[in-house]
Image (tube, rainbow, N blue to C red):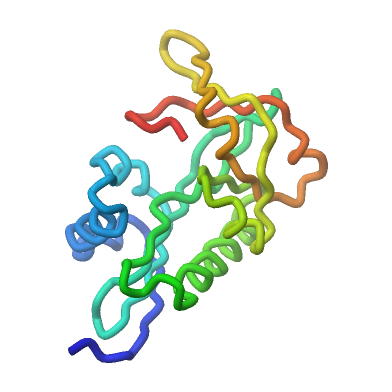
Length: 178
């Protein structure tokens, strides 16, 4: 039986070593087997936010630093990755609580934060805004258009006019550019 004792934990990827295997398993289960090794690698290198109930991981999100250009200005962006809540705990405020922590962290540490999602309404309640921009990835071969991501990117920033950016370019990374 799982006790109801909750614990909120935040740590860097370096501090995560002992938990890394269980986080990897958790994310694969939460994404119903659709969380690749490259998805996991993309979630490392930044700050992790986790909720444990009775010693079991039930929610996770991370924020990693990425270089992303909005129109022609490059920004060090806090990019949100690997947001997940265990199936048995969905609909019980854990997702909202972890995203509030992530949003507060982003506001306190980055001028610009971004994430990619199809669940726009969930993030809008925290102040995230859907970008209406054309997306690209900068590869060794030059710019590559990523049309499938045009309606997925959300922005969190107090910098004026960034929500009006028309073109977004990220540096390439393994398998999943956004």
